Length: 259
Image 1 (cartoon, rainbow, N blue to C red):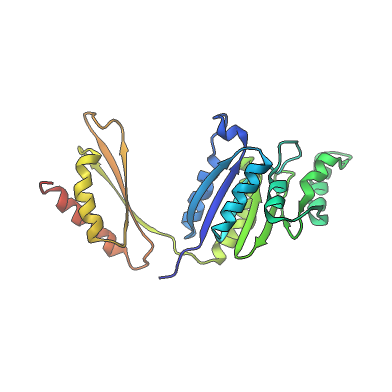
Image 2: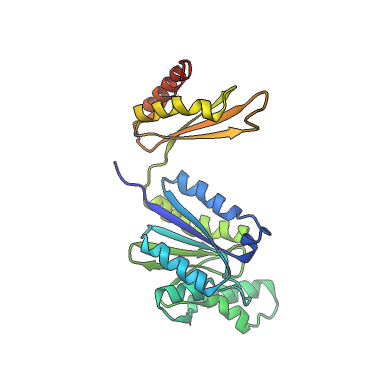
């Protein structure tokens, strides 16, 4: 069976760590990685700190994912440190990228009658050496792509609309090119059973079908009148539809027995 390509996400921002902002970006990306047959191995949230970004990127690259996505920290302000942190991790210098500068200038020309390129604006076009800008159709800061060995390192803005636009235009073609196998999934609702009562039958089913991944999600209070568990069963085997159905039937038979 072909091994699925792997990915990691690093979200950067103090606002995520103090509870001010919910990281919906990672959730959105995770769904699309799964849809295109990629395995998301890790999501890391880091402070707006050069040391944190450098260490986080260095650690992720050491694990050699096929794709490493950083989110946030590409803007013009003092706490937008992602590209500088990446440059430190890669031991590369930052330099003004002509293509990125043209993107930034064109964007400000569309926003203002006279677009002055201040040092704060040119900061968004200052990339690690060897990096390539990715067009941002709805914002000012370009995305950034740099190849590091087998890993494609992609940096995207934290503003959701900008992140989604760049991801759709520049990252999804990369996901498609890898030709990953999206997992098949069966989902069933089990009513009137609590998770600890499900566990023995689920364990027997898991051992009987070792190629499948089982995940149970309790819904509502365990001691409620109508307890509910949502059970998901996944497989990346292209011929696994019958196996999934058989696994569910096996589990239901096991649940009818005394545990």
